Image 1: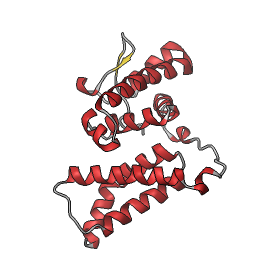
Image 2 (image 1 turned 30 degrees about the horizontal axis):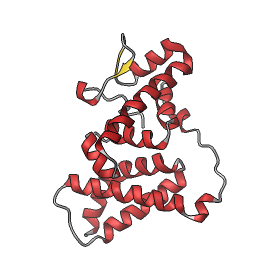
Image 3 (image 1 turned 90 degrees about the vertical axis):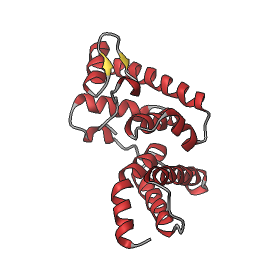
Image 4 (image 1 turned 120 degrees about the horizontal axis):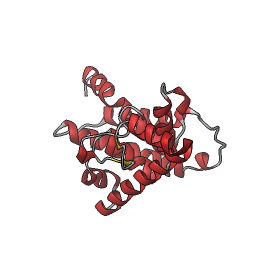
Length: 192
């Protein structure tokens, strides 16, 4: 792969790869290391991809595998973590509440929310990327929506939860339920 082509791909996919790595590892330095390893594998790859979608899916799969490998390592298991308070970097209280709620979800829910709402993959594509069953992904998305709604409501009462959800992209304000991708809204866009 030529340097110019690689730099274009790096610019196109760097945020996606980093977000996936951070979602799994919840540590900036580890996410940066995994991102670097992923792009090194892309640079050294001899076979080209049939299209951009296949290339992006490959990058996500390699990133997820690298995260799993890092977490299985002895070094990673035996270190102390410092809590990172990234939510404070966002500008509005609604974005902060949604961001904090998404990143407080268990990993299996965090990943599907990120891939579905932010990366705009379909449930079927997420199942293929993560190696999980289609019904599992659907169940995890539904549970993640319920958990997000509950977390946001508990954060500052029902009104604040409703306001945070609707302000940060995508609720039925009367029903207090996150809209799905099918209804044309994106509850996490710009917040991850």
